[in-house]
Amino acid sequence: MALEEFENEPLNEREKAIVRMRSVTNYVMGIFLIMAGCFFMFPLRVTQPYIDQYDPVMIKIFALLCMLYGSFRIYRGYKKNYFKN
Image (cartoon, rainbow, N blue to C red):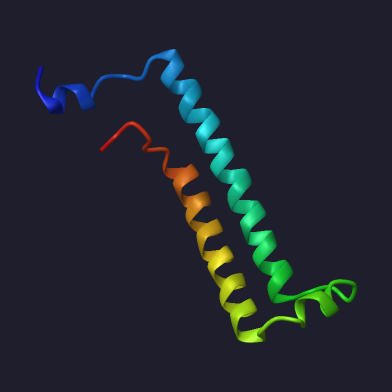
């Protein structure tokens, strides 16, 4: 059996459940990371004193990285290519 034939095989029920679970996990983690990035980028009045203790440039960089990685997690959940190399 060639590698190309193996890639074209349909997924069994267990693999479909794994793909579904990983996809939902990626969506939830992506949303959480984007929300965390927004939280650090635009802090609330209650959390402002705690965030102001740190370097504002590093906080903005961290917030941007959170948002980018969250977007990547949502994209990865959308593509669902977990068993394909």
